[in-house]
Image (cartoon, rainbow, N blue to C red; front, top):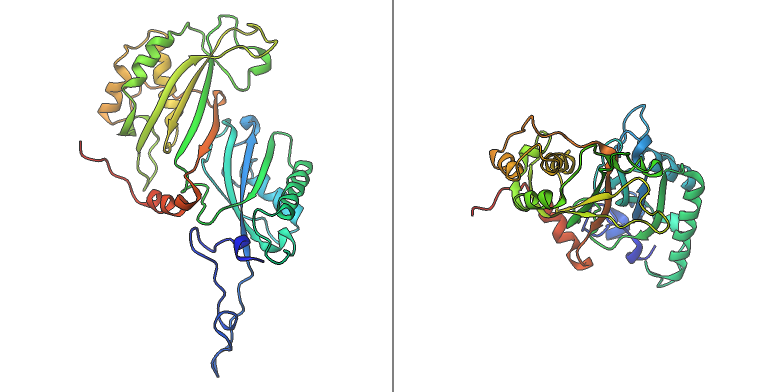
Length: 333
């Protein structure tokens, strides 16, 4: 396998052979170590309907997105055991994704024997990966699609290299309810919503803050995040759809990362402002208090979709991953 196809034993560091394979014959009396087989890191671009899943993360005796994809990879590639995926965002039960990203380290042999000088961008490599996408499509259930497989650039880590995640939360406030054909991806809110009020309240949540008031605390995890965008807008009807099922209002939410339940808690707080149950300044006051407020209702999962994960240029991937791994604290103002 060429060096350009050799993935790294750990993110951002080149794979190295050991023992005699790296430094010549082993000294007398020393048992030569067998060189580790080369591996290749692949990036997976994934979409799924989260309705029937118990979230992304693999769980015993539960149907999960991770479990289904790992099992499919193991079956198609005839591996002794399923490989382990690393994902950009571990979505909860019922949450959907159009732009999920994961990586997996596999034996380099899955791409076949390379031609001399062949690299990650070669036409033959692209053909092999396209064939793997096609084979996975025949094995995966219809509510999961892997729509792209690529050789990951050096230093790429699906989770730690990411610089932003973009979610969308879709709500319908029509008195008649949601279009039945969209009921799995749109929340019905049975009170009229004032988009201007929700956007006014959202402004006070932007920036880098400790979002403990809107997160479910996890041991050892920080709740400091930089919320870069939180904006509501009325969605244009789809072609031929007209106004069936009433208007759909979409919240676009972008941050460097999100803590557990953060997006849905923010949405729940803003819905209370939009329908008049809470004043415009209430979400900002909850944020400043820094503790969970019983008045914040976490919005249901099915309205939420992970739309995009963003990454820096290839030469900044490893540096970004190292930066993300550091425990975060608030910058003094």
